[in-house]
Length: 531
Image 1 (tube, rainbow, N blue to C red):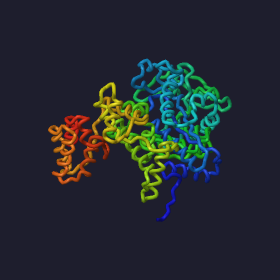
Image 2: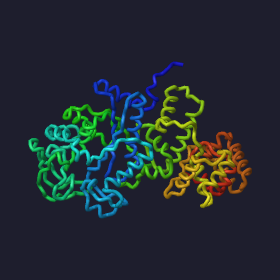
Image 3: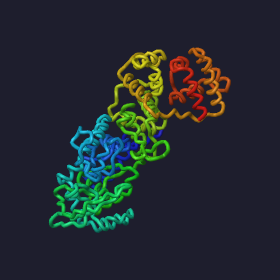
Image 4: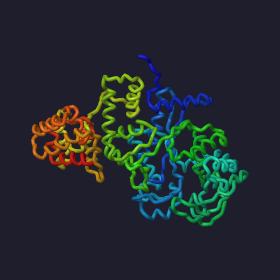
């Protein structure tokens, strides 16, 4: 068999890491430490997209280390940003703090020093639970400590050319009239609504007027104050169109992924880094935004937000990391209804990894093994864990006595021959599935695409369940429905499991249907055929 050249562990993470290093070699920069960066939003609740940025960047860090280079992830918190609107679930009095830097707003829940610390702690807690290692950098501290001062001065000194280039690249003309810098108003304490008029390099000050600005759908009035702010005092920040470039140069960032919505900002920042700061911008990987099932972007305002905190209530860290590492190209829909898919996908991946199977396609074999290794953060266990279809656990938990869910589920799984005894791993999975089964607003399993014979077989079996109540009778009814409609049992049973469990495998059907309730199973099957 012809040998193929496999980069690292054969995944897209390895390809990105390889291309990053090749570019650095051409630039002639030191490879003693290859830093990657991820931005952490601090003005709204963390969601699956914001945590995904850090997970992907950490994967590239691991891939760089796989190829023999020391690397670290800088998690930069945008906690000097202004509050644009009050997030759902937060107290309405926060509207009085619109446009104030979130690091200077009190924590509405009184458990942290500021609003930014509260929101940031939720995201950092999720990253910690996911095993993502990072070096934290507060944006407000970066400005206060002066670490960005050199970059700010260079950008403001060339603000005229920067403004013209922004207009040329993305058609935004406002920076031809204003500096790409926003001071905190000394009178009202707000940011964004100040208009930076001029920069005095001799005195290192920016002259501004608090005039107001459009934030989302609302125009926020300024207080009218006019004054000067000294760059070194850290009471102002660069606008996004140039801030990334300053961060890259100040922290020597060599790779940063970005979402599709930031394409224009990255285009401008790349130019600023190269032409104003004299710093070649980092290598990039662009990813699509997550969507809900209707194709709408996941967002707080639409109300379809999926948070990492919620996900980890119902599923393993591995399942969420797999969601991010499986691929980077193309838009994907995501919801809490997808949790069984990713839990089972991880089990399938682990089964393959610990099996003696080897895909004849060397690239695919390497990619599957590499994907597993990155999903477990290169901490491969000695053996595989407990693998039981997630929806089976959820369904059994939903019919179990309230005060003995775990005992009931384990007992049934033992009777099915799927496990031999209780284990800590199995107990965790039962608890996750039990919570998932009990949540509100869950969607039914999407039935597979079936031919007419398969549909008839499912419908006949479903109706037979209203008559056949014992395990043997149910098992025989399944065989009869398959035979009558020209299907082999090996074709029919996976169809039933896919409708009921979202998997092509499951326990012995008769005992399982008895436990779950024949009438309930019949209803589920008939509803699936009607969709």
